[in-house]
Picture 1: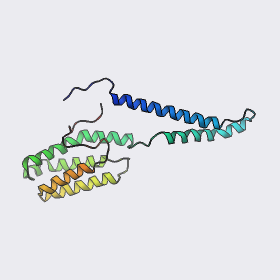
Picture 2: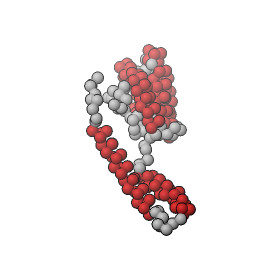
Picture 3: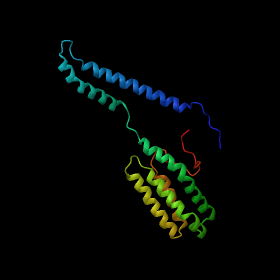
Picture 4: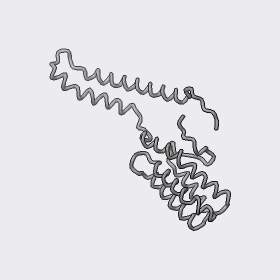
Length: 189
């Protein structure tokens, strides 16, 4: 395994710079909104209190416009990374056994079939953008179902085709992988 540096990586510096820039823009926008809602100097305390909800709303609207929508919630992303680290090695191992044998063997069906299908199902269910199952995760579970049926029918070509389709159907993000990747790489330093 390659040695990983413990120093700051360039992508982290760029990410922190981008977040700092967004925070500065949000503060500037909130300040502009705040300035437009300043009460006149002769305003009574009741009038000033009536502007507070408007100020708060203006600041929140500025933040909502300036900050991007996250591609994946942090809980779902960390769960996907966890399942990537725990389930991908089992999927890779089963694929290697299939490719080495060149067909669906009795040994594979006895030793790897159940574990590989379960790992694929778990990893597919973890690849969703939010907490509820979405179109992508349901598609992956359907791919697993088709892969399982092809294995039970001992159809090697269909099994490999469904395995590749499963890999291609994984949504963009931390769950994506190539067959040449290290299956234990969690993508987080």
